[in-house]
Amino acid sequence: MIIKTKDFILRPFRKTDLIEYHNSRNDPIIARNMYHGIYPLSLEQAKIELNNFINDKKDCEKFIIEINKKLAGAIYFHEISKNHKARIGYWLRKEYRNKGIGTKALITATDYGFKKYKLKRITANVVTFNKPSIGALEKAGFKLEGILKKNRYKNKKYYDDFLYAKIK
Image (tube, rainbow, N blue to C red; front, side, top):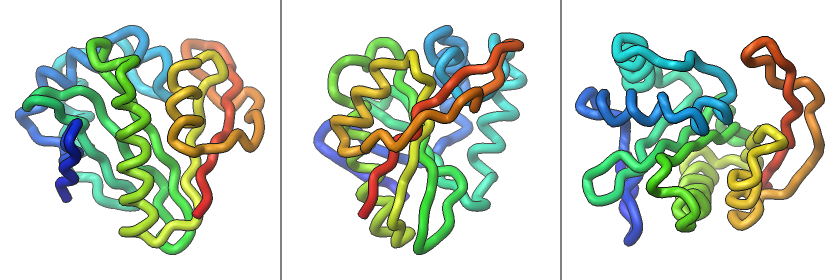
């Protein structure tokens, strides 16, 4: 599926995204805020992740956010339960942050998810210190439902997440 807007294109991952994906995943801010994942990521590890994204079709759907033929970020649904709920995740490369792209991508993707999968609920977990992501979620119509204490274990530390949801 390819979704075109006036600001960006949401499209499936491709093998040709490898170098830009590898560079993106090694951004310390993206790595810090991701739910899990290896950091720093070798080119070979990035290739494995990318191939998994391309080939994994089970209860998930993943998109590159493309602007002017460049990888600007990614947005993806996990744990899709048709006619019920899914979880959304996303990230943006440094040069595309603070321009409203994350909010617009969230709105576009959630509208798509509600329609395609007939979802009633889309959730997002965001680490409590990720203020830009919290802002994007709120601008996209997500509401804070609670705090998930010690929900994330990364780099030998536990972190709390905010649980946001958008209901249809």
